[in-house]
Every structure is written in C-alpha cells, then in structure tokens.
Amino acid sequence: MGQGGPIFGLTALTAFNTALATAYFALGFVWTLAAARRRRSTAALPGMLTTAQGALHSPPALAVVLPVKGAHPQSASNWRAQLTQHGYSGHVTFVFVVQELSDPAYVLIKQLQAQGSLPIKGVKVLVAGLARNTSQKLHNMIYAIERVDETAELVLMLDDDMRMAPGAVDLLAHDLLSDPSLLAASGFSYDVPARWSPVTHAACIFRLLLEVSVSTGGASAAWGGCCMMRRAHLLGSVPDGVMQHWKDDGYSDDWIITQVARRHNRRISNPPLLFLNLVEFSTFKQVYNFLHRQFFVLDTYVRPPPGESSLPWVDPHRRESYLLALAMAAGGLLFALAPPMFFSQLASLYTTQWAANESWPVRLARPEVLTFLACFGLAAPFALSGGRALVRAQAGLISTLSPAGGERMRQEGAWSNLLAPIGFHLYTAMCPFFVVHGILGSTVVWSGAQYHKLNGRVARIQRPRQSPLKSISPPLKKGDGSAPSAIEKTADVLSGLASSRASHPTKPWRRVRTGGLRPRSSLRPT
Image (cartoon, rainbow, N blue to C red):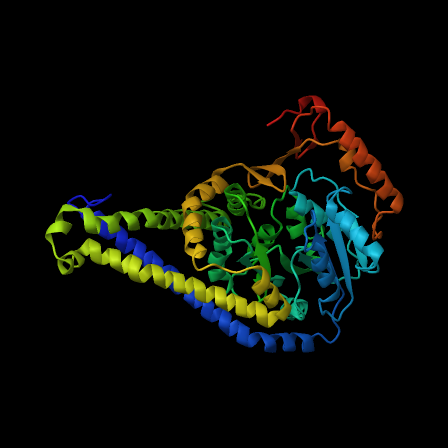
C-alpha cells in the first residue's frame, strides 16, 4: 500500500482500520444482543398478554385520540382495524382530529361513516384549525384531548396508520395501572422497507439503531405513534405537567412527555410492543428531511424551572441530546469513510510498487493489510449478521403479536440483503450533515409547514399561502362527534372560492408568530 498509503500514512491507515473494525464489531455485538432480547420478549409475550387481560377485571374507560392528515390507500382498512379490532373490553371512544375541513382524511372518514364502514356511535371527528404557536400535530392533539369525555380514565395517542394487535391495548393499560409511578406506557415502531430502493433502506436504519436501547425495555422513552397516559396527567391544571409544556410553544409530543417524566423522576414503560410501519421514500430529499426532523427534535426542550439554566452543559437533558448527536455524527463519519477506503486499499494490493515485488503471504502479513482484512473480512460481515438477526427477531415479534401484521409484512415489505448495507452506508454518509443541521439549525419543514425554533420551542410557523377562507374551522361544541352537514356544504363552497382565487398570484408563504397572525402588510415570502 505504498510508503504513504493510498490515502493515509501506513500507521494512520492501520489505526483507521483498527478503529473501523472496532466500530463494526461493537455495532454487530449490540445488534446481536438486541436480537436476543427481542427473541426472549417474543417467547414471553403470550404469557404477558394473558396476564394483562386477566388482571383487567373492570377496565377503565379509554379514549383513543387519532391525529390524522391526508389519506392513503391503506387509511380505510387501518381505521376499521383500529376501531373494531383493538380487543379492549372496557368502554372505548375514538376521537379523530384533522387540521381543516378540506383535509382528505375528514372527507374519507365522513364517507366511510355514511357508507356504514366506520361506526358513528362512540366516534368523534373534530377539526382543530391551524396551529399558531405549536406544531400542527401537537395542536391537533391538544384540541382533541381537551374534548375527550370526562369519563375516560385513560388516553391512548395513536398514529392513524398503526394497527393495534389484539391484547396490545390491554398490555399498555395493565402496565400503566399496575405502577402508579409510571407517567406513560409506549410501544415502538418497526420500520420495514416497502420500496426496493437504497433511500428507503437508509430511512429504516434510523430506528434499527434506536432498537438497541428500546429492546431493553428500560429506555423510559415515549413514542408518539402509540403512547398511553392517564387523562388526569394530561390536564392543563397539572403544574409543570405535559399539557402545560405542550401549550408552551411545544414542538414534539413524545419528546416533551419524555422530558417531563425525567424531570419528575417518573418512568415510562416500554413493553415489547412493536407496530409495523411500512416505509416508502422515492427521493433522497424526502429521506434527508425525515432524518433531519428526527435530530431537529433533539434540541427542542421544555422551559426550565425558575432559576435554572437550559444551557447544554448545565441542563442534563440537553447535554445528553448533544452527546447523542455527537456520537451519531462521529460514528456516521467513520462508517461513511468505509466504502472509499475499502476500494482504495483493495486496489493498492495490486497496484503499489511493493505489491509487485512481494509474494502474497508477505503482502498479507503487513499490519495495514491484516487490519484491512480483519475490518472488511470479519468485522463488517459480523455487523451485517447482527443487523439481520435483529430484523428477524423483530419480524418474529410482529408475527407473534399479530399474525395479520406478519402476513402483511411478508406481502408488502422486506429488507433486501443487497440494499441493506448500501442503505446503511448511505445513512452514515448523510448522518454528519443532518445531525449538525438538526441540532444547530433553526428551521425544519414538516407536512408542508416550516417551523422556526428559538430556545427549544416553536418561535414561528410559515405555511404555503392559501385562501384564509379555506382554513376556517367549524365551531364544534365540546360534546359534538362531527360537524353538521351544513358545514360540509359550506366547505365545498369555500373550496370553490379557494380554487377561483388560485389563478391570482399570491406570496408563497405566510408567517405565524407565537403572538398570533401578523398583519397582512407584513407578510413576506421566504
């Protein structure tokens, strides 16, 4: 590999190979360990479900809050499954909440109810309107939770594309009710590529890495896709509580729940509940935005108590977030260098001056060559085998929890042995960029809205300009389950007005500050 090596000096090259091999071995080890934990969880899961169902003799009333936006081909089947196949024996009410009347989800829900495909009794459909000082999802959740029936003791916050397996709700409720010190009980997402593409596999690597912590059951972290809490802990009257911090220019529902739990020394239960999430991205830009948003969240935080600082070296939560980001960026950079270093060193085995004068046994005995072979011949395959073992263990848990979910996973999604390592190194190549962009950047685009953060909270919201009439929300009463048909007719009229307005040039964005809507004259495009 030459006196100077292909890229580094020989000593530096040997050190790099050693560091990369150590990282590969470490990653393979933690993935293998996580796979073993998931296999144990799979074996114990039937007994846990039976115990939970038997312990809930008189299950408390439950309200399921589903913030929805848009509709996709699986929406109708997902909603039917959520409303009819949850398996909870207690009284259950469902609250769908959308941003505005023109949302396709609102139209589809009403259509399914009119056709009898979705029940009307026990189901509310609320329209929250546009958020002004929080993320739109959080605004929708606040609006819905404040209108949950007072008889409900438990609230389950559920993404509309999460299919609840029979017994899963019972297990969450049993965990939460059996331990008064718990603030929440939460499941976790099992991301599976639904498209045969490197970018989709790269997106799925993110939660495969998080699984190392979640699989222990002791992560004590909330996931917004499936999180249950006592309604009493979601009241706005709770001092320094979840609702108070949500309304205080909050951005992330689950990250705030996790921070409040840690501040008050309360735990979050993470039972072995995985929910199938079929991931499909078609462009690099979509994947980058998704990963950027995950790390943008890391530097959002609740307002510190009076007299305390929120500086990263003082606030333990922010310090932990920055250390995690630093580790991810450094690890990503190290792994991102692996492909070019592999091909460079492989070529050097044949093209350098000493290679022509030495026999293969002598060449292979060189320290830089030995570490090269150990890194890419042993450590990298070991990491790949650990990842495969974890994916198989997760798939086994999904199939045990829900045979229907396992069948859907086999039919609609799968990891590719070829694209998985490509996706991993694509993820690591992007990692330093989206980590730094997320932690140090002040803006992010989520579902069409651009959020600006300041001091860990939402400072301003910018949206593509649309007709003000289109975002008017119906004045629903607290107990209403749906908007009256007259309002639906009004929505059609408003949509027509919005369409006629579209032919006139308008500025593409409008700004919404935490103080409310700015005067029209001050609106400027980004």
